[in-house]
Image 1 (cartoon, helix red, strand yellow):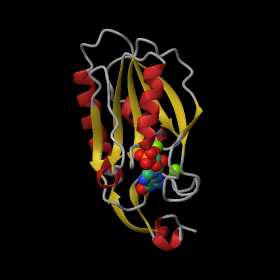
Image 2: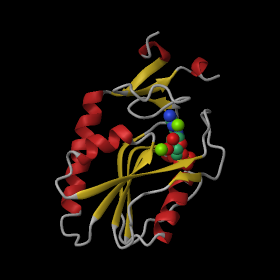
Image 3: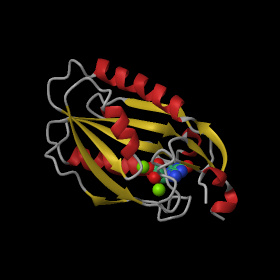
Image 4: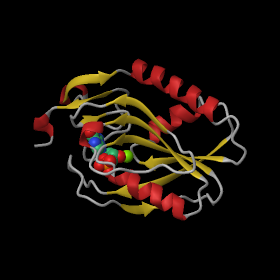
Length: 187
Ligand code: 5GP
Ligand code: MG
Ligand code: MG
């Protein structure tokens, strides 16, 4: 019962992921250095848990950490439309600079929903840091605000990928690398 055998190929190794995260953390640390109000890193559960853990350990500024959950997927490989927030941030984010940390941006629906939500709670700005960006599948346009920035680790080809936080039916999140799941595993 090896997880590795369920993958068609590896897209990014653990070393490649770590190297890219070091670059992102440096960029974020540089660009947020002059920000006066507090920074809150908000991870989108569950997929962003490993990425967030590795990213914040290399950010050299004081940051608070919180989580939010938005669900639209179920256990399939395609989004079923408008996401619903099923778990909200605990911290008071009013007046704070938010860095929303995502595993992957696909259609953009989740970000559209989360950014509007954080804005309505009084955030001063919302930036997004996603490990993967599946740009080819974008169907909605989301707007960052308050000089929010968009950080992306890797451009992701249009395959269903798993590993390093990303799941299929809640499995494969603990793979240390990211790869393409064999279609027979989900069809
Ligand atoms: P969006 O709302 O942008 O369509 O979808 C975002 C969410 O869909 C991601 O946070 C992730 O949970 C899920 N998702 C989209 N593409 C993939 C993929 O290739 N693999 C996995 N495991 N999840 C995906
Ligand atoms: Mg996600
Ligand atoms: Mg999922």
